Image 1 (tube, rainbow, N blue to C red):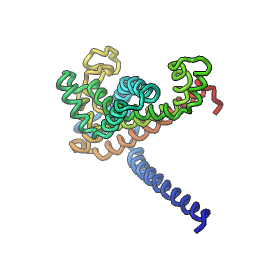
Image 2 (cartoon, rainbow, N blue to C red):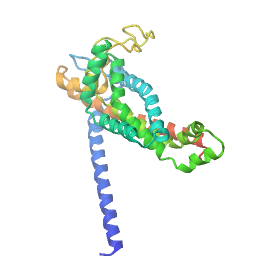
Image 3 (tube, rainbow, N blue to C red):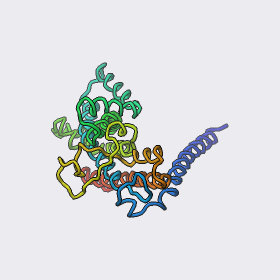
Image 4 (cartoon, rainbow, N blue to C red):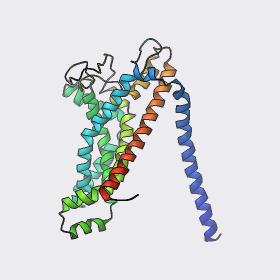
Length: 296
């Protein structure tokens, strides 16, 4: 067998494996969207969930999911960015750095249910936050931080050393080189890490069952006082997300249209994640072109 034949066989095998992955992905997404999208409506998106009768919506669950996502990213992104910069640019290759990386890998592989129990014992019980949005956001920070840190570190390390050398040759300090040259060049990779983390956060359920809880009180969207128990901005109130709502509807089996609600909620969850991905990538590409003066 000559080299060209082996190359054709290898290429065909790679394309076959990629096709299998794509078929599985579109099969899963297609099944969820086909079964759920027909049940989506403005009433479903804008009304409260009903616990005992058909016709309820997921307004509060959708807002809670977005609120938790934004709050978790606000907490975790600065920490992960600082840790990623330190590991990629400042940390020396020694046992301490290897210990940090090993710890990050171990934390990133922890089951979400373990993180949820840890968050329950620490934030809900020990700190006295109770079942609340802040408890869920802090627990998701522990869940999200290792993966986000690793992604940011890899994105920064992927920037060619020649770009750092060019900045230093122009008389820039190390920090100015990182801030003005390395970080803009690493922005697409950093954004990819943020998107992956956001998808995990938005679809997480197990950790939030033990920390954010299941909201039963009415949320007042006209109340902008973050300290009011009914305010939509109150971080100390329980908050049921879309993923937790899917679990609750299917396990309790109280409402008569549980199958329809879970299918529509699943489709909504997928659609929001897709829109977030597309929007974040468009914003990232715009910032990349603006910061690096790239034309494409």
